[in-house]
Length: 316
Image (cartoon, rainbow, N blue to C red):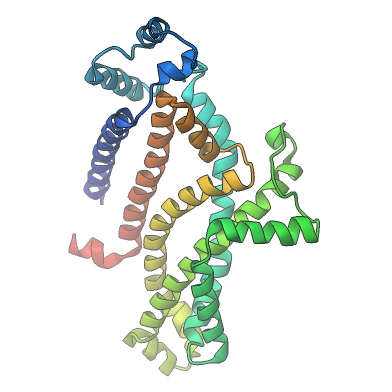
């Protein structure tokens, strides 16, 4: 097991290195000049050249990448080319919105997808199971923006229970208002991602219910539902853990879109703004941070999968 963990950590390090190179060099291919953005439209070529020199943008691209990579190894994501502020500090500030949004969305997705997925599997030949399957399939196809607009219309405009947009200026110093601001965005992401997860759970539960050990447990006097929950859930849990690793990427993409819709000052909204401003240092730091989150969670999923499945340990 130790060797497996060390191998996964090594692959994680290699993945981050490859991701950093792809992000850095891809951003340099994009059209536009950050020096021109800083200087303004009325600037002279000499002024633009002076800004490029002061920012180090005139150096060879490999030298620029080496400097950025050296900073990453020291835990330094660099500074904004436009505001000179620390990228790491701004990411930490914006993460106070994005991380709770992703966590709340994941909790909402699990709260309704796990029980309803099992219900849809147990009652798959009844009306209730068919309805759950049909509704989940429809929700999984709903665009996040449309779902968010519907929730705003119902809970903010019609009922007036929740704020439609924004986040408190004092942040989490006003926890009540901050939580209220995240309810609708979290519901928007959680419902859609939960509908996708529900379908996987239903499929895994249906497959597990046909296994011999579940039928044997039912033959000993257990109900079909109890036999599935007590004997089949370990296999269902393996599928859930695997899918959750993929769902994280969906949560991150959903957060970027939803932060725009609900005017949340999170990482996604900052990323869109920095791309428009051609602030390459901030953009590459933000993209690398998001990529690192996905890769780390993927590594954790692999390790948890190995811990939950004794067959993999025996094979190893």
